[in-house]
Length: 281
Image (spheres, rainbow, N blue to C red):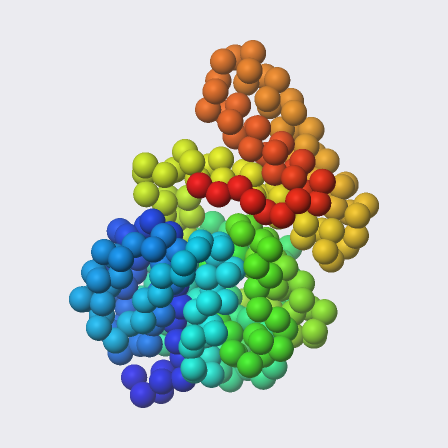
């Protein structure tokens, strides 16, 4: 394990104690791990430290979202390399070791990601690296991301204006502008649970939160990188869908889906009016 002294694993959690404990149980205790628990759950912190005394657990005073949580952890890490893991993935120690050993051989990379189950990469691969298990891609979902800490800082930390969604998309776009490649490591595939990582009692609230922020973040991502016209043209279908959805679900007395459509509408209207990302559970 001495070969991995220069890597810190970082995870960001919010009210997902079962998921965070499961993935921590599956990771070798000799790996350096930092957990950012955005819910300020002191009981969970004690539980983690009892399981892994060498793990660092931080409870930020305010939940500023995934990107801010990852930034918080990276600022407190001291190793050359960072491995970010979503808490709702299935990954083993052998996979982590292979990813590390192959990624450190790369020079001047922006980020290394891994294959996700059921995701097609046919339209995402830009370049196949001959005689290697790596490809250069235009995008990949950021549930597993391997960084060189200094390169990460040179590209810029995650934009904390994005509370949820498009954080990694924004980072990837900045990687491209700084001529840092986004790699796909193809030797194993991880299963990503997504929405199911949230505790059951929060899922309805999370669905509303998700719809609000997806629309807000989508508009502001395109505004930031491609300008006002692209931002409006890319989000107008979402606007139209949300308005029609509110009308249809109101007539049907389907108040659950009415809330979801209204969340999309409110997220877009806040974005169009230039307001900050402000909706929270």
